[in-house]
Amino acid sequence: ALLTPIERFDLHQEDFLAVIDGMVMDASGRMCAPGLLELELYCRRVAGAVGKLSASIFGVRRPEGRSLALSLGQALQYTNILRDLAEDADDGRLYIPRELLDSHGIASRDPHVVLRHPAIMQVAAKMVTMAEMRFRAARRVLKALPRGPALPARIMLATYQRLLSRLVARGFEPAVWAQPVVRISAAERLAIAGRECFR
Image (cartoon, rainbow, N blue to C red; front, side, top):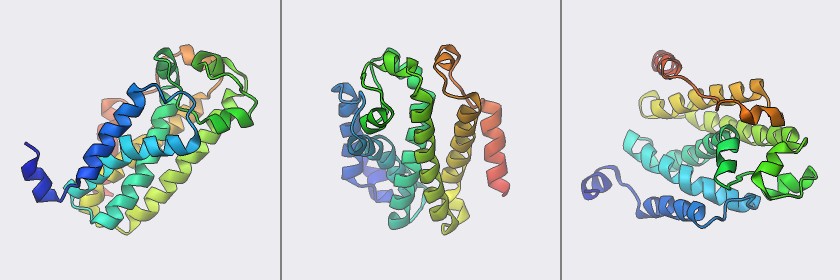
């Protein structure tokens, strides 16, 4: 079933395998306060590899597509981590790197204990900064790409940038984890896509 798209879009086996490897990292229970390097590897696998496959399908040249996929993929994944902290905690997962926890005096690796710690706000703020750095890197790559092939990436960037802004506006105090997960509505996503199409 994949043979035709693989040949048509020059898709690489390593990217398909990377996605599977990322799922294995989740299934093996390794993603509870992983080291920063392991978190970056996870992001490259579950988001960057998908981005590389998508970029090839959309017609973005391989070198630029790889750079875009890795920077944007990390930005999206960091945003997802911040959005889903409470849900992930219920599943026994905590994607915040242990180095950040240690540097803010959070010794526990129990996700629920971490989310109740007063320093979680500073930890989350650092994660926000990490995501924003990746968004900026992705925007630099996008500026050099043709509009058509890069349009899906532009829409994803704008959508997730709004999600990150909304998360920052809500805050990361321990009390917020009982609130509903922050989402971007279908109507908002459609409006964002429309703006990017005509920008």
